[in-house]
Amino acid sequence: GRVRMRISEPGDYGLPGQPGVITEAFQTQARRLYCATDVGELQFLDTLNTPPQALAHDFLDLKTYLAAQAWAINRCVVDGDDASHAIAMRQNLSASLVLSYQALDETFAQADFIEVVSKDYSRLLDFRPWSALRVLHHVASECAPRNQGKKVKLFEPWVHMGFAKGVPPGLRDLFNALGEFGLVQDVRIAKPQKGNPNAPALHMLSFCWASEAACTYAAGGYLEEYVWLCLQSLGLPAAHYGANVGVVSYDFAKHARADSEFNEMDIAVVWNNRLLAVECKAGVQLTTGKDQDIINKLDSIKDNMGGAKGNGWLVTPLEVTEKRVLERAKRNRITLMHGPQVVKDLAKRLASHIGVEVAQPWPVAGKVKLFKAPPKKG
Image (cartoon, rainbow, N blue to C red; front, top):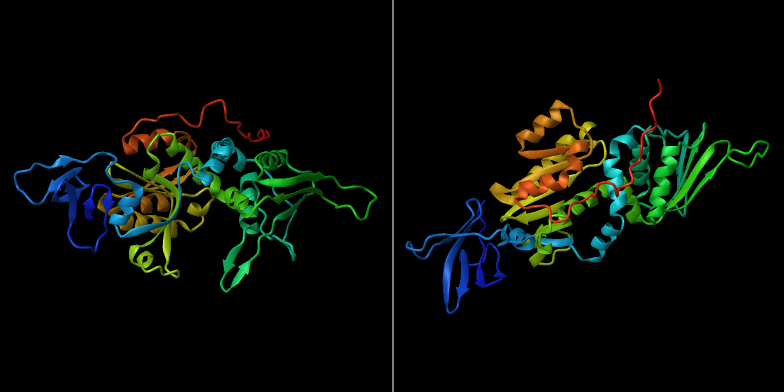
């Protein structure tokens, strides 16, 4: 909860390992100070007669806070950059996907056939999820490029899905919405043609991913963007928060070691001189045996980057009921933000935790088009 750094002049922040604790230049005389973030005080170490001063809420920004913990930011989405503008362009889609999470997961859309195609080959997917939401996550994850040991799995932009009883309307609407925001292209539906041996025997839904980034978004990245937009609505200064925050050990960064390992925070914010690290999970990882790895990673980030007063939030639209997951999160001091109502009110919950007011409410009720689950039979 205490941040040490060296300041040779106002705004010039040094790093641990350099001589001195905290120094700040006041005109011609340097002062020795201690930044006690756990009690919100700036303490004077060179005199016993000077009372501590209250720390301003914005005394430390994200870059400075992490630097004081010996971490350097390797990459980060910042309010106002190109990535943040792209997030803003599809904000309504992100809100639709998150706020319709339960409805999409109740929309039956199990395919009888799924083929993904790259420029060099095609392959069939054996696992075919049953709901529109899980089809979206699974197909996007499978099509994205990734390292597989010493091999690299190529990007597979083309997708063909076959259905014996017709393309489910909910799935069709979902991919049409993705098409409206430029994430998929050439969305086509073809019916079987009787008497034509060259025509498909199934009802087909075909499309092409617009980019590798579109796969990342559809596989769950939309939740990270939703949380970013909720945080953005608080009106904090841009230097105090970021998305996809890649960090590297300062020692590695200082010596330009390209092979250094770095961690990543989906969302990070520093306010009141404390770090909140947010991990976003749109899939079912928390309920399918991967919860320990997810919670352990966030716990490590919270402690190593946030210090004694760092906080970690795990955000998912999924309603988590497994006692194992709930207890593990509590034991590791991880706040589990889960379920439809929680994510709907996430901006307010962030504001309450950080200690600010929502500057511009988001998402705006009535402006988000929600997907609807089909009526239940019987």
